[in-house]
Image (cartoon, rainbow, N blue to C red):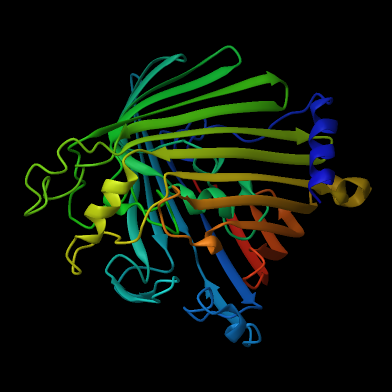
Length: 432
């Protein structure tokens, strides 16, 4: 499978192609001639998992090897875009997102050795203001945006709408180790110059106490409070290079201090013990997209590092049980690599091609690990996963896709592999 994917990439590199995706957020793409823009996207997903959903399945794999399958229905995202052009270079953009059908509180079972029950106030559905910004455009190469913005680190965050990936759910590796969609309050400078699109951001920093063993930085951009603690700041950057028509390379990254970026700023009783613990975080990502001749190929590689993990883990285990912070050990590093390729077979049928219908047959392979530990840390080998998926994407019209896939996670030999079948339908478009 990997050899096939690598061969497809090398073949596509030799082709002049046209990438359809545009970097960044869709709110920015106002309908020509209209001052008011309204749009959105949404997804419905139906899944059958052919493995145990017991919280102890990694602790005692043999006991749960023959458990019955289990199903899940979900609406991962339903999003409304509203944008407005005030004139004289001033624009506004908002994105309101409903995750998992709404909001409320729910109980989650933490899938680890303890199988703890956790009361998650923000889960059971969420309603989030994912974007809210005011922008001043001085020229094509110089735009300043201030407010709540998308942090475009990684392929998934820069292109998070459902028409930008083949799988029913967002690509699993990046979605595990990074916030998704990563959004935070700050200021951005971005522009286009020649074959480049670039963006530099200053945002509220990640929170070291929100890092976790099973998700690394996935929850570290969030806040359990009515405000986002910003005792420390983070800096993100992204550059997209459109080398030839249709071939895009992306390079993105983040750096910032993650320790002491919580509330209260200094935990009760810690005194000066952890004053010099920085939790310096570095994230680097490369990605690419090819799209033409009825092929779409996407790939990415992400690597993360956080310093002082031994001391941070000591602080985390000392937090009160009622606190909103994760008490699991975190790894010093995290990794996610993925590639997917799909071919539009309807392109070979004249009637369907003329009607602009598309049917992509695709395959995806990825490997990821949110817990790359130091030698002195406890082992949790189940966090290292490889995943294979293949299926179809049918697009009856440009704005709608129906997805079906078979996928399988491959874990280390002492654990059970995790196959599943998923069906989804999604839309993305502008109503005004």
